[in-house]
Length: 76
Image 1 (cartoon, rainbow, N blue to C red):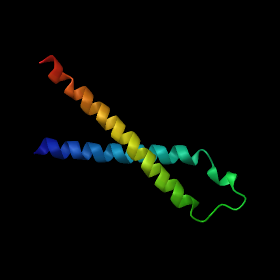
Image 2 (image 1 turned 120 degrees about the vertical axis):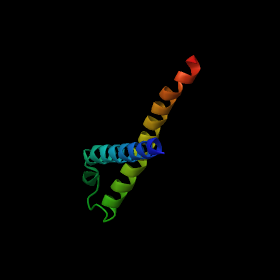
Image 3 (image 1 turned 90 degrees about the horizontal axis):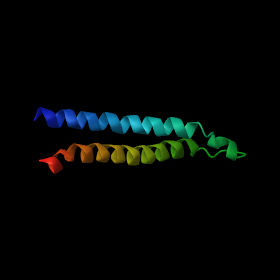
């Protein structure tokens, strides 16, 4: 029971870490410079895009970690 809780906490931390990394990376592009008058919803678009990219990257990372952990069953 406790292992499941630790696993869930690890997944939440990884999700937030990757979303933060994606948000930081997107801010480095300075997308607002592409517009003469940036739309008011541009910050929302940046947050939603960072959330989508971060979620996808985190799921890929967690999937790789799970696959590596399951390789032990191949040896048994």
